[in-house]
Length: 483
Ligand code: AMP
Ligand code: ZN
Image (spheres, rainbow, N blue to C red):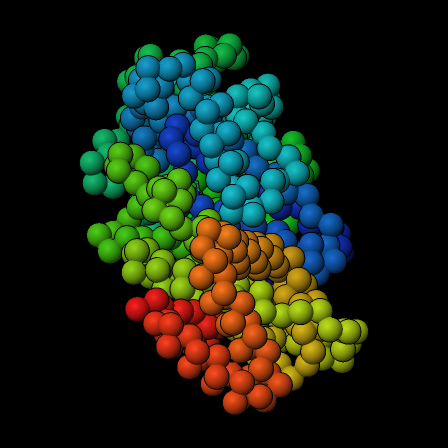
């Protein structure tokens, strides 16, 4: 499988260190607010990767942290802890906020068919591991104490900027607009591993450490949690593109300094979902959530389908117009699937030929829009419905668009509608003997037409017309009007 690797800046053949076994780390959410649909785009595309690796026969161990401490409002170690900010906003404790938004996040994931990672680790559960790692970095001379905080010394590295997709001058934290330089830092890119002093002294959660009572920096949590659960060699690390710098850059710096060798060979970054007015943000207050889309009547699967239609390495613009187009396509697709009926044995040759097109798309840097095209090709294929249904079920192990489930629901809904219509007619007939006679004659006329007895069919029509009843033939059947 070819997968774009942010480290090498090209599509590399993805080869796990142990064949057939993949260790995968995902930066989890900062649980101070609901996830917005931009965050969820990243998790959906990571889910497709996770599922495709499994579909291709790998055993995947996927680890995700929950950021419940240490993520400050600015990436440059400045500002308030986002969790504290959330707690103040809602007059709750940080732990209550963390629990509430962690549950909300996984509820959204479930609705979007995002598989639960094998390991979910809140940062606050790993304080001893962070302390051990920070101590190790101090012992090896990669960290220093200044003004009460422990900093990582980036000047000790032969190469700090590893994701060369960016220009160094754009990345330099110290020169970012609105960010004041931290005088304790020896080098502008040094970052905090452990805080005991910050401008915001009301940090809610603090722990004792060899450097005083304090709390961990954001980057150390992902390095330590990944090392704890995936060991010293990680196959693939995922996140949204904004995580590449400084978060992932710092993760690489500290992890490799700590273990003394290369840590993770493949870096998978999902480009952002934007609105027409620009970046989507949780901190702006007004933001798009999955619940909002649901309240407007969108099935979460429509949003997943919308994401599937574009490549993960392209920015995606969200608008209701675009989502409506995806909704029409999704519901039309479901209606076409609902019309398929099992009709015999699966044609293995057709099955394998179609499946090869699907895997070709997915092996080509996870080209989900081509995979969706392969799905439409199944509907057009010259084969029986059983083969089509088997292929749809197979692709949907990866796309996870609940295709068969929604098709079944649509069928049931249509049956219920028909039954309700039949009942309404029966009720009307029971209440009025004239209506009962009309319905009886409509049935007899139908039988006559089927038997090609058109004279009888016409006689019934004329008989009813004489009684002031007009028959109206439609594609769905015959109705009547009493004049
Ligand atoms: P956070 O909860 O802020 O830590 O972000 C969770 C995940 O969402 C991270 O992987 C981010 O890189 C990613 N992310 C943030 N904003 C967007 C966006 N607009 N589009 C796609 N992914 C995003
Ligand atoms: Zn992370």
